[in-house]
Every structure is written in structure tokens, then in C-alpha cells.
Image 1 (cartoon, rainbow, N blue to C red):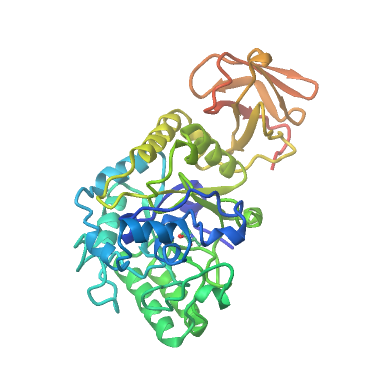
Image 2 (image 1 turned 180 degrees about the vertical axis):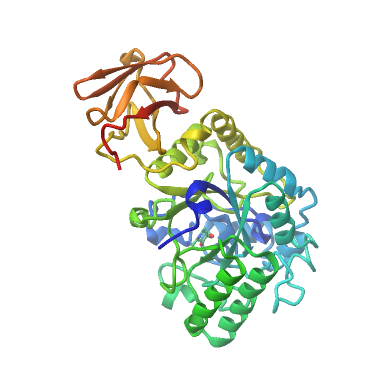
Length: 440
Ligand SMILES: C[C@@H]1N[C@H](CN)[C@@H](O)[C@H](O)[C@@H]1O
């Protein structure tokens, strides 16, 4: 597995899930994927973008909600109800860039089969001819690239409840392979759409989801060859049923084993859903400190974080999600150098720590960066950093936020002394890597 330098140095991307499901914007905030009982998952799905499926499971709260609030109307109605009247892509991308995102991945077609561009085979069932009446992918790709970021395309190859099978997925009668369409006609349909995405938008990331139809697996080598010929610095994720992967992905708590790979990316929502869920409150969302610490933890282990925003149907970003990105932006302004174009510090050079204090490390060619948070009051502003002998030079300690810091060598490491180390947002102390020992 290899990736272009831009991807491994990017560290942070923003995911966008936006579709007709953003109109009802309704799910139960059950919990994180990988931490919810699978028997509960489908009938109480926290993913609001699964509304079509969840709202058809009789007896589920979503089924009752759809019946009582939306009169059981056809899901297709939500495409026309989706107006995106306040959509300002430049505003979104400016916020993402300030938060430090280096790439943006947008849903081009999610499981409901609705295309956010004039996709071949969809007739008028796309956002160009109905609902927003806009090529939302072109709008987003243009705004992303105008701001100097990379643009990626999410495509649901494995599930399509419009062009593929419309089987409602319930846990108790989990039909073969989650009702995924595998027939040749759907494989040709999906192939044509992904090739169209490549040719029209040249996505820097090809982010497929839920695998690829069996009848289309033989098409993939040529598809990837075409992709790399069209986008030489393009990167392909790992959700193609094993056909190919430039990097591996995990999602919330699921597939965390993939985070041992040379190149990997963890994706999750700011809350428990990818699509906007009106039922999520502050208790369901990451706060800025938790989001920053998630980013730092992922980067310290050599991964990228793809953090999702779920826009409202009108095209505005939910205020509480904006606030999290603003919080990340204000921290990143002083600490970007410790995150981007860094790599994990050899565990032998310094130890991370969970709990109080919370400690993580990154490094670049010349420096090591210690991220400190949740230093208890009892520590009186002192933290012991367990480091290998002679690897970091305490005399070179600098706090990236400019506040004073003192560092002293002790037998099993370095003691850092500084005021206000206990913030939930990490404090970063930079040390010069001594040349006495290689730490790689
Ligand atoms: C990024 C997420 N991937 C899952 C499949 N694991 C989707 O089911 C979900 O709706 C979202 O797109």
C-alpha cells in the first residue's frame, strides 16, 4: 500500500453527508458504530442517512415517526422537498480550511441512490433536475479546489435502494449480504457512474462504500487504471470487497484493526450520525477538545481523521457542528506545526498516556511534539514525560502557544513545568530531537 505525499501529510479531512435524508433528518442517537449491540443497530440506527431503511422497519421509532409526522409518504418526496436554498459552498469550505482540513470528501450517491450530480442512468432523479436543481458535486469540487484543498468523492457502490434491490435490512431476518445488489445490470450502472465521476470531477480520493457488486468485480482493474491515469495523485480507499486499497479505513469504533496499517483513515461524525440528525444534542456530539484530541490521537498513530459534517436540507451547517469546527480552528492556528507533515514518534523515544494526564507524541525531522491535556490540579503544573535517555533535549522546550515552560531531565524522562497545562484542549511542548540517537 502506498499513498501520495499529499494524503499522508494531510492528516485531517472533512466528510460531507448530504441528501434527501437531510429533510427528515431523524434518527435515534443510539450510540457509536462498533459499540452498539448489532441486534439493535438496524431498527434503532443512529445514522440519519439510513432513514429510508430504518423508517420501514415496523415497530421501530423511526417507523412511527415517519407515519405520524410524514404520513408515511414515499421517501422520493424528500428529494423534491430538499431545496438547499441557503447553500453557500464557499462558506462551508472556508470554515473547513480554517479548521485545518486538507481534503473534503462528499457523498455523490449514498445508499438511497440519489445522485448529487447529473449521473448517467438516473434520468431526472438527481439534484440537477429535482430538489436543489444544482450540480452539488461541481459546486463543492469547485469551492474546495478554489481554497487549495483536495476533493474526494464518496460513492455507495455496495448499496443502492433505487437502482439496486429495495430490500429493507432488518437484523432478525438479515437477508443475504444485507440485500446488496450483485446483478450485472446494477454493476454496469454503478461502473458507468463512477467513471463519469472520474471524468467530470477528477476526485483526489475515490471513497467507495459497502463493497462492489459481484458481477462488476472484473471491471475494477480497468476502472482503477483509468482512475490513476486520469488522477495521477489520486488515492483509493479499501471498501471495494478486497479488489484494491491504497489505504485502510475504520469507522467510529468499527474496523479499528485497520489502524495498524501503514496508511489508514478513521471516519466518524461530529455526532453519532453522518447525515444531520435533529435528535442529537450536545451530549451526543464531540466538543472541540474531544475532536482535537481525536485528531491528535489518530495523527500520533500515523492515521488521517475524516470528520463528518451533516448539513441541513437548506444548505446551512448546524450551529453546533460549526462551533466544533471553529474550536478546532482556533486550536490549530497555534499548533498546526505539530500535526501536519509529522509522523509517529518511536514508542521507544517517548510514551503516550491515557487518562490524567493525557499524553500523545508526534515528530518531524528535527523535533518531537508532546501533547498534554487533563493534567490534574494535584500535579501543580508538572508532568513527567517518560522518554528514552538522551533523545530529546529539555533545554530546547518551547510551548507552541507561546506560554512559558520549563523542562528538566530526570532519570526516567523529562519533567515539564508550566502554568495552565490542564486544559482539555492539548498544550503542545516542542523539543529538539538530539542527534545522539536515532529515534526512527
Ligand atoms: C461513512 C458511513 N459508512 C457506512 C457503511 N459502513 C454507511 O452505511 C454510512 O451511512 C456512512 O456512509
